[in-house]
Length: 85
Image 1 (spheres, rainbow, N blue to C red):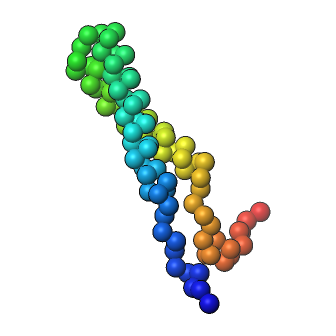
Image 2: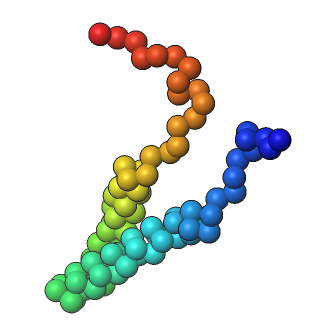
Image 3: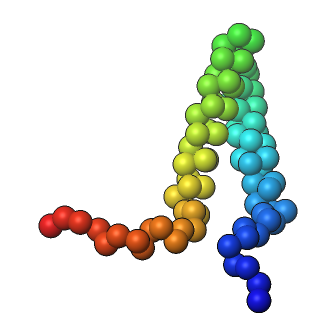
């Protein structure tokens, strides 16, 4: 008989997902920095916008990933019925 309490190791796709999010955020930041650099010709302003764009896009992508794939329910979720009303 197998023990179902042992967690399964994450797949390769699950392990590379954070790298995909960081890479996509870096691409967004590079495009934003390039657009600001070409429109203003100021390096410091372009770097600031690229850094801010990286952080904002990383947070937005992470939140979207949480909304799309919620964590699997645990055994404790059904322990108590919801109270109220």
